[in-house]
Image (cartoon, rainbow, N blue to C red; front, side, top):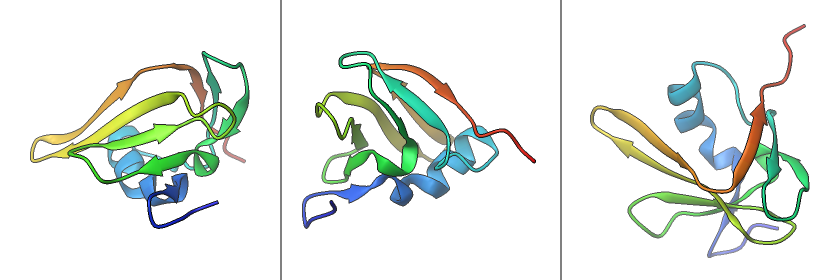
Length: 89
């Protein structure tokens, strides 16, 4: 649930689109710590630092850190075991 401190993964839609060239908020990913699977839109995003920190909603592990740079987005995959974009119809 979003609060003043965090938002849901939909807030990352533009940066993820820039990085992957397609809609990614509906992509599924797996947490390497707890094994739970969530779509990117369900991740918890903290936006108070130089990069956006995306955490697992099940165990709060940092899955990704995303930073917009002048040269393009940079994404560090910390504990995201896999990421599978939704298949196009």
